[in-house]
Length: 222
Ligand SMILES: Nc1ncnc2c1ncn2[C@@H]1O[C@H](COP(=O)(O)OP(=O)(O)O)[C@@H](O)[C@H]1O
Ligand SMILES: Nc1ccn([C@@H]2O[C@H](COP(=O)(O)OP(=O)(O)O)[C@@H](O)[C@H]2O)c(=O)n1
Image 1 (tube, protein in one colour):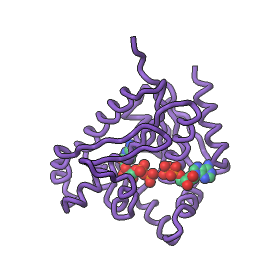
Image 2 (tube, helix red, strand yellow):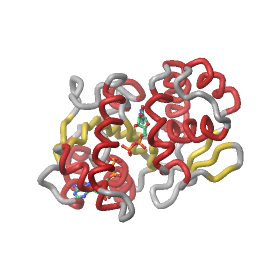
Image 3 (cartoon, protein in one colour):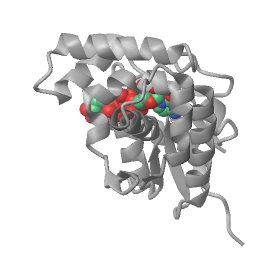
């Protein structure tokens, strides 16, 4: 008899630490890790490759038929592959970030990817999986035993993100992130915790303290 993996659902705005903290938590617990934003980014990458109008929902939806996507669930290294192309680095480019919100607001895209995330999570070869994104606690895995909204003040989030990029002016990074959050928040509410979701504010916590705080929430869960 096989048991389904335990799902730890983590949502939050850009730069809140979802990806890095979730990865570290997964490593500590021997769990898998799923970055759901990578799939929206990969579809945005494909739309740019095909030069389709990313503001045209029908054109975006028609791409789903040829969206041959795979992602690893190992927190120590996961490749993002679209039709045989390794796009792990390409999906982080600013040109992708600037169109991803338009892709993510198409309802057909969301339902297609939500189904894909549920399959990946159910198939993971570990006792559990940390799944992070914007709608994991509310749509992808609303019944997950552990659901966390990771937040931090906007200025702190922008500073953390711009510290990663030496070649971008901090102000530009901040403005782009804030605009993306505003666009995304019109589609999914990831700024307010849904019923039963634990809010974890990392504004005054360093990275290790944030990881410890997430683990504490998991350990306190009956
Ligand atoms: N509590 C924290 N204190 C300091 N830096 C952090 C903290 N949490 C995350 N970071 C750093 O902030 C940056 C953004 O985190 P990331 O995981 O990419 O956020 P998200 O996935 O929510 O966009 C990373 O460089 C990460 O190492
Ligand atoms: N569960 C999710 C995850 C990401 N997304 C979309 O995908 C984009 C990229 O997500 P991401 O997690 O890589 O973004 P960062 O916060 O890490 O920059 C977001 O800006 C959203 O538009 C979503 O709509 N739902």
